[in-house]
Image (cartoon, rainbow, N blue to C red; front, side):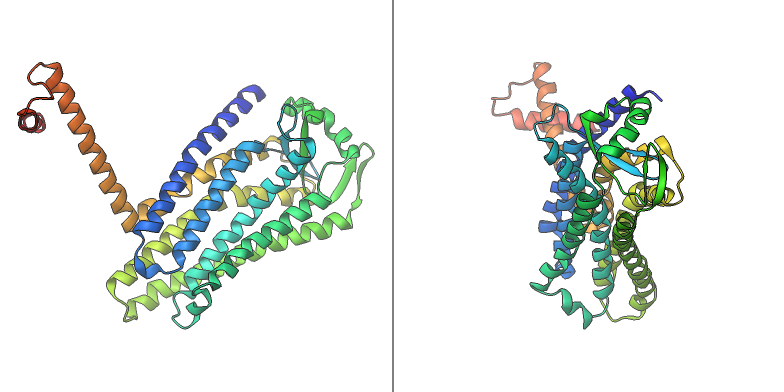
Length: 362
Protein backbone atom coordinates (compact mmCIF):
# COMPACT_ATOMS: atom_id res chain seq x y z
CA UNK A 1 0.00 0.00 0.00
CA UNK A 2 1.45 3.36 -1.03
CA UNK A 3 0.87 5.42 2.10
CA UNK A 4 2.14 8.66 0.61
CA UNK A 5 -0.42 8.43 -2.21
CA UNK A 6 -3.14 7.43 0.25
CA UNK A 7 -2.44 10.34 2.60
CA UNK A 8 -2.22 12.78 -0.31
CA UNK A 9 -5.51 11.58 -1.78
CA UNK A 10 -7.20 11.61 1.63
CA UNK A 11 -6.02 15.17 2.28
CA UNK A 12 -7.34 16.25 -1.13
CA UNK A 13 -10.66 14.52 -0.45
CA UNK A 14 -10.96 16.31 2.89
CA UNK A 15 -10.23 19.73 1.39
CA UNK A 16 -12.50 19.26 -1.62
CA UNK A 17 -15.18 17.70 0.57
CA UNK A 18 -15.21 20.67 2.95
CA UNK A 19 -15.18 23.21 0.10
CA UNK A 20 -18.19 21.52 -1.54
CA UNK A 21 -20.12 20.39 1.56
CA UNK A 22 -20.31 23.74 3.33
CA UNK A 23 -21.65 25.86 0.42
CA UNK A 24 -24.01 23.00 -0.47
CA UNK A 25 -25.40 22.79 3.05
CA UNK A 26 -25.65 26.57 3.33
CA UNK A 27 -27.60 26.61 0.07
CA UNK A 28 -29.88 23.88 1.40
CA UNK A 29 -30.45 25.88 4.59
CA UNK A 30 -31.44 28.86 2.43
CA UNK A 31 -33.89 26.71 0.45
CA UNK A 32 -35.35 25.17 3.60
CA UNK A 33 -35.89 28.60 5.15
CA UNK A 34 -37.33 30.31 2.08
CA UNK A 35 -38.85 27.59 -0.13
CA UNK A 36 -40.24 24.98 2.25
CA UNK A 37 -43.98 24.19 2.06
CA UNK A 38 -45.79 25.84 4.95
CA UNK A 39 -47.35 22.53 5.94
CA UNK A 40 -44.07 20.96 7.10
CA UNK A 41 -44.17 23.06 10.28
CA UNK A 42 -41.31 22.65 12.75
CA UNK A 43 -39.77 19.92 10.61
CA UNK A 44 -37.88 22.59 8.70
CA UNK A 45 -35.93 23.35 11.88
CA UNK A 46 -34.87 19.72 12.05
CA UNK A 47 -33.75 19.88 8.42
CA UNK A 48 -31.76 23.05 9.09
CA UNK A 49 -30.32 21.36 12.18
CA UNK A 50 -28.98 18.47 10.07
CA UNK A 51 -27.40 20.82 7.51
CA UNK A 52 -25.77 22.90 10.26
CA UNK A 53 -24.58 19.69 11.95
CA UNK A 54 -22.95 18.53 8.73
CA UNK A 55 -21.20 21.89 8.29
CA UNK A 56 -19.67 21.60 11.77
CA UNK A 57 -18.86 17.93 11.11
CA UNK A 58 -16.99 18.72 7.90
CA UNK A 59 -15.04 21.56 9.53
CA UNK A 60 -13.92 19.38 12.46
CA UNK A 61 -13.05 16.55 10.05
CA UNK A 62 -10.94 19.01 8.03
CA UNK A 63 -9.17 20.33 11.13
CA UNK A 64 -8.47 16.91 12.64
CA UNK A 65 -7.88 14.88 9.42
CA UNK A 66 -8.83 11.62 11.19
CA UNK A 67 -7.16 8.39 10.13
CA UNK A 68 -8.48 5.04 11.35
CA UNK A 69 -6.43 1.92 11.91
CA UNK A 70 -7.46 -1.43 13.33
CA UNK A 71 -5.61 -3.79 15.64
CA UNK A 72 -6.76 -7.14 17.02
CA UNK A 73 -8.20 -5.57 20.16
CA UNK A 74 -8.61 -1.91 19.29
CA UNK A 75 -9.60 0.52 16.54
CA UNK A 76 -7.82 3.84 16.94
CA UNK A 77 -8.60 7.23 15.42
CA UNK A 78 -5.32 8.99 14.71
CA UNK A 79 -5.00 12.77 14.54
CA UNK A 80 -1.78 14.55 13.61
CA UNK A 81 -0.32 16.65 16.43
CA UNK A 82 3.08 17.65 15.09
CA UNK A 83 3.09 21.06 13.41
CA UNK A 84 -0.42 21.89 14.58
CA UNK A 85 -1.33 25.32 15.94
CA UNK A 86 -3.12 23.50 18.76
CA UNK A 87 -1.47 21.87 21.75
CA UNK A 88 -1.34 18.10 22.04
CA UNK A 89 -4.10 18.16 24.66
CA UNK A 90 -6.40 20.25 22.45
CA UNK A 91 -5.76 17.90 19.53
CA UNK A 92 -6.68 14.98 21.77
CA UNK A 93 -9.95 16.70 22.75
CA UNK A 94 -10.70 17.42 19.08
CA UNK A 95 -10.06 13.76 18.32
CA UNK A 96 -12.62 12.75 20.94
CA UNK A 97 -15.01 15.42 19.63
CA UNK A 98 -14.69 14.02 16.11
CA UNK A 99 -15.63 10.57 17.42
CA UNK A 100 -18.54 12.06 19.39
CA UNK A 101 -19.97 13.86 16.36
CA UNK A 102 -19.46 10.75 14.25
CA UNK A 103 -21.44 8.67 16.71
CA UNK A 104 -24.19 11.13 17.63
CA UNK A 105 -24.94 11.90 13.98
CA UNK A 106 -26.94 8.67 13.90
CA UNK A 107 -29.15 10.06 16.66
CA UNK A 108 -29.81 13.14 14.54
CA UNK A 109 -31.41 10.94 11.90
CA UNK A 110 -33.23 8.92 14.57
CA UNK A 111 -34.82 12.17 15.72
CA UNK A 112 -35.87 12.89 12.13
CA UNK A 113 -37.57 9.52 11.77
CA UNK A 114 -39.28 9.95 15.12
CA UNK A 115 -40.65 13.33 14.01
CA UNK A 116 -41.82 11.99 10.67
CA UNK A 117 -43.61 9.10 12.36
CA UNK A 118 -45.23 11.22 15.08
CA UNK A 119 -46.31 13.85 12.52
CA UNK A 120 -48.52 11.23 10.87
CA UNK A 121 -50.74 11.27 13.96
CA UNK A 122 -52.42 14.69 14.41
CA UNK A 123 -52.88 14.40 18.19
CA UNK A 124 -49.37 13.13 18.88
CA UNK A 125 -47.57 15.73 16.77
CA UNK A 126 -48.22 18.34 19.48
CA UNK A 127 -45.13 17.07 21.33
CA UNK A 128 -43.02 18.81 18.64
CA UNK A 129 -45.04 22.05 18.51
CA UNK A 130 -43.64 25.48 19.37
CA UNK A 131 -40.70 25.69 21.73
CA UNK A 132 -40.93 21.97 22.51
CA UNK A 133 -38.76 21.38 19.45
CA UNK A 134 -35.79 22.77 21.41
CA UNK A 135 -36.02 19.88 23.87
CA UNK A 136 -35.87 17.35 21.03
CA UNK A 137 -32.95 19.15 19.39
CA UNK A 138 -31.00 18.80 22.64
CA UNK A 139 -31.15 14.99 22.60
CA UNK A 140 -28.39 14.53 19.95
CA UNK A 141 -26.28 16.99 21.94
CA UNK A 142 -26.72 14.88 25.06
CA UNK A 143 -25.72 11.78 23.10
CA UNK A 144 -22.68 13.64 21.80
CA UNK A 145 -21.60 14.72 25.28
CA UNK A 146 -21.85 11.12 26.52
CA UNK A 147 -19.71 9.96 23.57
CA UNK A 148 -17.17 12.72 24.25
CA UNK A 149 -16.88 12.09 27.99
CA UNK A 150 -16.66 8.31 27.50
CA UNK A 151 -13.91 8.51 24.89
CA UNK A 152 -11.97 11.23 26.68
CA UNK A 153 -12.04 9.57 30.11
CA UNK A 154 -11.54 5.92 29.11
CA UNK A 155 -10.21 5.45 25.57
CA UNK A 156 -7.39 7.99 25.18
CA UNK A 157 -3.77 7.10 24.56
CA UNK A 158 -1.65 5.51 27.28
CA UNK A 159 2.16 5.24 27.45
CA UNK A 160 2.02 1.42 27.50
CA UNK A 161 -0.21 1.11 24.45
CA UNK A 162 1.74 3.81 22.63
CA UNK A 163 4.91 1.77 22.93
CA UNK A 164 3.05 -1.37 21.90
CA UNK A 165 1.75 0.13 18.62
CA UNK A 166 4.84 2.20 17.79
CA UNK A 167 6.42 -0.31 15.41
CA UNK A 168 3.14 -1.33 13.77
CA UNK A 169 2.08 2.27 13.11
CA UNK A 170 5.47 3.06 11.59
CA UNK A 171 5.44 -0.04 9.36
CA UNK A 172 1.84 0.12 8.14
CA UNK A 173 1.11 3.85 8.13
CA UNK A 174 4.61 5.36 7.98
CA UNK A 175 3.74 7.48 11.02
CA UNK A 176 5.84 8.20 14.09
CA UNK A 177 3.45 7.66 17.00
CA UNK A 178 5.07 10.58 18.84
CA UNK A 179 3.81 12.92 16.11
CA UNK A 180 0.15 12.03 16.60
CA UNK A 181 -2.55 11.64 19.22
CA UNK A 182 -5.03 8.81 19.13
CA UNK A 183 -8.20 7.60 20.80
CA UNK A 184 -9.86 4.25 20.35
CA UNK A 185 -12.31 1.87 22.01
CA UNK A 186 -11.26 -1.57 23.21
CA UNK A 187 -12.43 -4.45 25.39
CA UNK A 188 -9.09 -6.07 26.17
CA UNK A 189 -5.94 -4.16 26.99
CA UNK A 190 -3.01 -5.34 24.90
CA UNK A 191 0.66 -4.60 25.38
CA UNK A 192 4.07 -6.21 24.85
CA UNK A 193 3.11 -9.00 27.25
CA UNK A 194 0.13 -9.98 25.12
CA UNK A 195 -3.63 -9.69 25.43
CA UNK A 196 -4.89 -9.37 28.99
CA UNK A 197 -8.23 -10.31 30.49
CA UNK A 198 -11.35 -8.31 29.82
CA UNK A 199 -11.00 -4.72 31.02
CA UNK A 200 -14.28 -4.14 32.85
CA UNK A 201 -14.04 -0.35 32.82
CA UNK A 202 -13.58 -0.44 29.06
CA UNK A 203 -16.29 -3.09 28.73
CA UNK A 204 -18.96 -1.05 30.49
CA UNK A 205 -17.86 2.06 28.63
CA UNK A 206 -18.32 0.18 25.37
CA UNK A 207 -21.71 -0.99 26.65
CA UNK A 208 -22.68 2.69 26.89
CA UNK A 209 -21.39 3.31 23.35
CA UNK A 210 -23.33 0.34 21.99
CA UNK A 211 -26.48 1.54 23.77
CA UNK A 212 -26.12 4.92 22.04
CA UNK A 213 -25.64 3.22 18.66
CA UNK A 214 -28.42 0.65 19.00
CA UNK A 215 -30.99 3.00 20.53
CA UNK A 216 -30.58 5.31 17.54
CA UNK A 217 -30.60 2.45 15.01
CA UNK A 218 -33.70 0.83 16.55
CA UNK A 219 -35.52 4.17 16.50
CA UNK A 220 -34.65 4.62 12.82
CA UNK A 221 -35.86 1.16 11.81
CA UNK A 222 -39.04 1.13 13.91
CA UNK A 223 -40.12 4.66 12.98
CA UNK A 224 -38.99 4.16 9.38
CA UNK A 225 -41.09 1.02 9.04
CA UNK A 226 -44.02 2.73 10.75
CA UNK A 227 -43.75 5.71 8.39
CA UNK A 228 -43.63 3.45 5.36
CA UNK A 229 -46.71 1.49 6.42
CA UNK A 230 -48.62 4.63 7.34
CA UNK A 231 -47.73 6.46 4.13
CA UNK A 232 -48.38 3.55 1.76
CA UNK A 233 -51.60 2.43 3.45
CA UNK A 234 -52.90 5.04 5.85
CA UNK A 235 -52.47 8.15 3.70
CA UNK A 236 -54.14 6.45 0.76
CA UNK A 237 -57.34 6.25 2.83
CA UNK A 238 -56.96 9.56 4.68
CA UNK A 239 -58.84 12.75 3.96
CA UNK A 240 -55.65 14.81 3.61
CA UNK A 241 -55.22 16.82 0.44
CA UNK A 242 -53.18 15.49 -2.47
CA UNK A 243 -50.61 18.20 -1.80
CA UNK A 244 -50.20 17.12 1.85
CA UNK A 245 -49.81 13.46 0.84
CA UNK A 246 -47.24 14.44 -1.78
CA UNK A 247 -45.21 16.47 0.73
CA UNK A 248 -45.28 13.58 3.24
CA UNK A 249 -44.01 11.19 0.56
CA UNK A 250 -41.26 13.53 -0.63
CA UNK A 251 -39.94 14.25 2.88
CA UNK A 252 -40.05 10.58 3.88
CA UNK A 253 -38.19 9.23 0.85
CA UNK A 254 -35.65 12.07 1.01
CA UNK A 255 -35.04 11.16 4.66
CA UNK A 256 -34.70 7.44 3.86
CA UNK A 257 -32.02 8.07 1.23
CA UNK A 258 -30.35 10.76 3.33
CA UNK A 259 -30.11 8.32 6.25
CA UNK A 260 -28.99 5.40 4.08
CA UNK A 261 -25.89 7.36 3.01
CA UNK A 262 -24.22 7.55 6.46
CA UNK A 263 -25.46 4.05 7.32
CA UNK A 264 -23.68 2.58 4.31
CA UNK A 265 -20.64 4.87 4.39
CA UNK A 266 -19.98 5.11 8.13
CA UNK A 267 -22.17 3.27 10.63
CA UNK A 268 -22.05 -0.23 9.19
CA UNK A 269 -18.25 -0.18 8.54
CA UNK A 270 -17.49 1.31 11.96
CA UNK A 271 -19.83 -1.13 13.74
CA UNK A 272 -18.08 -4.03 12.00
CA UNK A 273 -14.71 -2.63 13.07
CA UNK A 274 -15.88 -2.26 16.70
CA UNK A 275 -17.31 -5.79 16.73
CA UNK A 276 -14.07 -7.21 15.34
CA UNK A 277 -12.18 -5.85 18.35
CA UNK A 278 -14.54 -7.82 20.61
CA UNK A 279 -13.78 -11.09 18.83
CA UNK A 280 -10.09 -10.09 18.42
CA UNK A 281 -10.06 -9.99 14.63
CA UNK A 282 -7.67 -7.56 12.97
CA UNK A 283 -9.12 -5.96 9.82
CA UNK A 284 -6.01 -3.83 9.39
CA UNK A 285 -5.97 -1.31 6.57
CA UNK A 286 -9.58 -2.07 5.62
CA UNK A 287 -10.61 0.36 8.36
CA UNK A 288 -8.98 3.18 6.37
CA UNK A 289 -12.12 3.19 4.20
CA UNK A 290 -13.93 4.94 7.05
CA UNK A 291 -11.47 7.85 6.78
CA UNK A 292 -12.65 8.44 3.21
CA UNK A 293 -16.30 8.08 4.19
CA UNK A 294 -15.92 10.86 6.76
CA UNK A 295 -14.72 13.20 4.01
CA UNK A 296 -17.43 12.17 1.53
CA UNK A 297 -20.46 12.02 3.83
CA UNK A 298 -21.17 15.79 4.26
CA UNK A 299 -20.96 16.27 0.49
CA UNK A 300 -23.45 13.64 -0.67
CA UNK A 301 -25.88 13.74 2.25
CA UNK A 302 -27.67 17.02 1.30
CA UNK A 303 -28.35 15.80 -2.26
CA UNK A 304 -31.51 13.75 -1.56
CA UNK A 305 -33.28 16.76 -0.01
CA UNK A 306 -32.17 19.01 -2.86
CA UNK A 307 -33.46 16.76 -5.62
CA UNK A 308 -36.37 14.84 -4.10
CA UNK A 309 -38.31 17.63 -2.36
CA UNK A 310 -40.22 19.32 -5.19
CA UNK A 311 -40.04 22.88 -3.84
CA UNK A 312 -36.26 22.75 -3.58
CA UNK A 313 -35.87 21.02 -6.93
CA UNK A 314 -38.04 23.68 -8.55
CA UNK A 315 -35.99 26.48 -6.95
CA UNK A 316 -32.76 24.89 -8.24
CA UNK A 317 -34.22 24.60 -11.74
CA UNK A 318 -35.28 28.25 -11.71
CA UNK A 319 -31.83 29.29 -10.51
CA UNK A 320 -30.15 27.31 -13.29
CA UNK A 321 -32.45 28.94 -15.88
CA UNK A 322 -31.63 32.42 -14.58
CA UNK A 323 -27.89 31.69 -14.64
CA UNK A 324 -28.14 30.27 -18.17
CA UNK A 325 -29.97 33.36 -19.34
CA UNK A 326 -27.32 35.60 -17.82
CA UNK A 327 -24.58 33.55 -19.43
CA UNK A 328 -26.46 33.57 -22.73
CA UNK A 329 -26.76 37.37 -22.60
CA UNK A 330 -23.07 37.75 -21.78
CA UNK A 331 -22.09 35.31 -24.54
CA UNK A 332 -24.15 37.12 -27.18
CA UNK A 333 -22.69 40.50 -26.21
CA UNK A 334 -19.17 39.08 -26.49
CA UNK A 335 -20.05 37.43 -29.81
CA UNK A 336 -21.52 40.48 -31.53
CA UNK A 337 -18.84 42.76 -30.10
CA UNK A 338 -16.03 40.52 -31.30
CA UNK A 339 -17.63 40.39 -34.76
CA UNK A 340 -17.72 44.18 -34.86
CA UNK A 341 -21.45 44.19 -35.62
CA UNK A 342 -22.40 46.55 -32.77
CA UNK A 343 -20.97 48.53 -29.96
CA UNK A 344 -22.57 47.71 -26.61
CA UNK A 345 -23.14 51.41 -25.94
CA UNK A 346 -25.35 52.11 -28.98
CA UNK A 347 -29.11 52.50 -28.61
CA UNK A 348 -29.83 49.70 -31.06
CA UNK A 349 -27.64 47.20 -29.16
CA UNK A 350 -30.49 45.49 -27.28
CA UNK A 351 -32.49 44.90 -30.49
CA UNK A 352 -29.44 43.65 -32.34
CA UNK A 353 -28.47 41.36 -29.47
CA UNK A 354 -31.98 39.88 -29.47
CA UNK A 355 -31.77 39.34 -33.24
CA UNK A 356 -28.40 37.61 -32.98
CA UNK A 357 -29.64 35.45 -30.07
CA UNK A 358 -32.66 34.32 -32.09
CA UNK A 359 -30.46 33.41 -35.03
CA UNK A 360 -28.04 31.62 -32.69
CA UNK A 361 -30.80 29.61 -31.02
CA UNK A 362 -32.65 28.77 -34.25
